[in-house]
Image 1: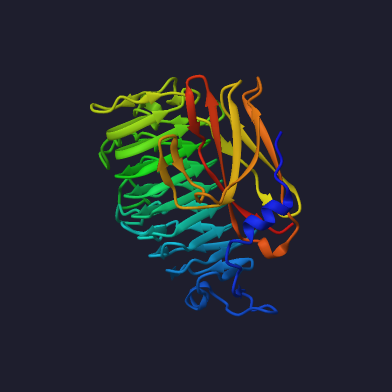
Image 2 (image 1 turned 60 degrees about the vertical axis):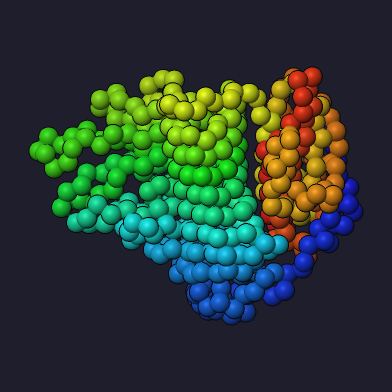
Length: 414
């Protein structure tokens, strides 16, 4: 097990700009509150500021600033779209511990959380995003998390459920770590019920996306209604990958599940790949409701090889952060830490830490269990709360070297 000295991490984090102002939002108007709803707080916050949401339900808003939106238990946003647009290069927008819900409100083109045109970084951690499932009298539908033309988006430990689709990544670079994504199931379209079309769990289009330790399920279809109210709705794959470069890694506890029609024992392919490239770790199971899954593609032959991936729990200041590297036993590994950064393409893969500003945690060999744990003692300094710490490992075997998938963790107060 390797260790990074707290003094080294303090030096590393000191390179980041300190927070400017903390804005308190409290629906109940409690002591110290600056605003009772989120939109005016977003209008006031500038780069480096933090917006703290106390328990309550709030209206989503829009921002183009590199700020932190910090929620907690009992914090809800919903029934409209939260937009993060045009955050400039060199800035970081962070949102964590927020529950977003849009049942029965959103129509086509209305995701719950929309990220667009951000050349700066976006980091999402511990969000619950539950998309719309349609409107009465029409077969409209809302979305979950939509990412368009963004340079670097990190999504960690988030639950994306329903919406059309729950996750849509277009023209962007993104990484999902330890997430759960569930596609929209088909609901009957008739004048007397709520309705929505089935959807894949994930759609990518012209994107570069890494999925690590993430479970994805496609939306179930529905048999034709006996009275003719609706035809058969076919099931959807876990992922619909279009003209994208996608890497999928994990272990037997994660996997991809195709949607099906239970009454007919009919299933979609687990992955539908339309051009682009796919690198798939053989440890990730592809499944249907009834057995092994499949990949549907007329143009892409997947590259199948083990891919090292990192996972980590919440990063609490003053405690040791365990970081697990999962890979083949016997491989040599070095873990690096730095401020989360826009990825750079290298011969070994995408590098998500700033060049020349990453510190080594230490080197070790992956044990027979296939999981190597590093420990990072985090300094007990409240001034570092909210800073994004990036982690990535390099591995070396006789067959060559490669980079692990990255992890961006947000430092939290104890």
